[in-house]
Length: 445
View 1 (cartoon, helix red, strand yellow):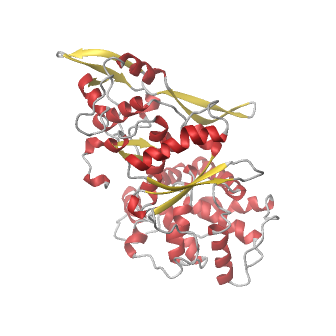
View 2 (spheres, rainbow, N blue to C red):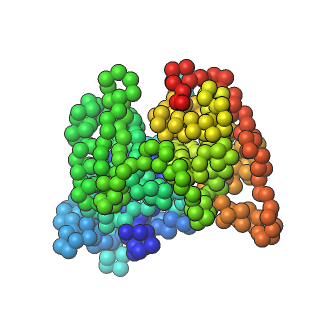
View 3 (cartoon, rainbow, N blue to C red):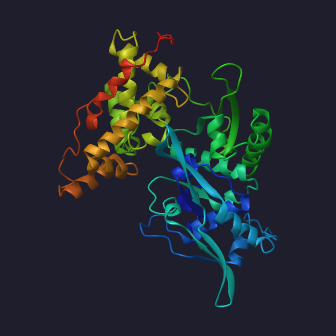
């Protein structure tokens, strides 16, 4: 079901950082309560503060925990309202910060609710919920977010199922314009962090039996997300270190072949509408790769959807410049432009050298983060424009930018320096190549 067909109060939107980067554990009823409040009482596009407090009648809270099917209400809500309020006030969202002490990053902590107080208004009993300033940033003024159909989420009864569903649904929402079957690799440590397991289920067998298998079974049974397969990956030695999910947002697509062979789209030409759908940074990344003589269909269908990492959003061209510079310095198989392009595609799609689990990805990301910080320091306006552009097509951004500058949007004007390989001072990415080499990887002929 598309977002446009939903009742607006049935959609809940959470900032990407809360879904993909934060660590938390809430009971199913607690997260369903937060979702109800966010969907019914919060305008995610407003830039003002959240209303304080937010009064929710107890009858609405009972309805909030229903899965939408007739007769299914939470019969224990009234008996357990105190414990629900206590959980929402005491439960913490854990997130990483850039603040270091003795060389280690300090974690930050935010309460879901600053307060939850039983209140009676005009004879109606309810709870007045308060949300702090830090929590508000995950609910309002959103530019990148995950939208979930609340009645669908309410059909899940396990907290781990809800957490995994949010993550997979967000990934499918972002990638479905490119493909119908999705792949995503997580390290075991990353999944454990996202689900705030800490000391629980340390052995992989326990983690698999108590968390993964029950969550996947419930998601497959009760939601539009269907997990086709889960592959265990051993990066070093015999210990399982990563998991690769293959999934779709429609069970009808479960039997479709997953895109992996780089020849699949060698003759595909993206339509004008498809190119127009790219953001500013995606369009520049597309332009760079096509200039490098990678086939347009491969760029659009296989490389752009596979640029992963929250730090890269809005800076996809930075990452591609890093990947290309790395390739030029490391590959010996560059006798012609055609051979170089084919080898680069093979590195990307077959060897997975630029995947999030690769050391190459880590090295390039370190440079991307450094260059982002330098851009923010040297040219804050250009940096802010990048953030605005993340949620616009490149043409929409061009019109917006020209409007900000007082330039007629109908006149073709360059709105940023367009010298390939030297975007926003990013040409210094090649410094990384002096420190890193592909000594142990065979070049693909």
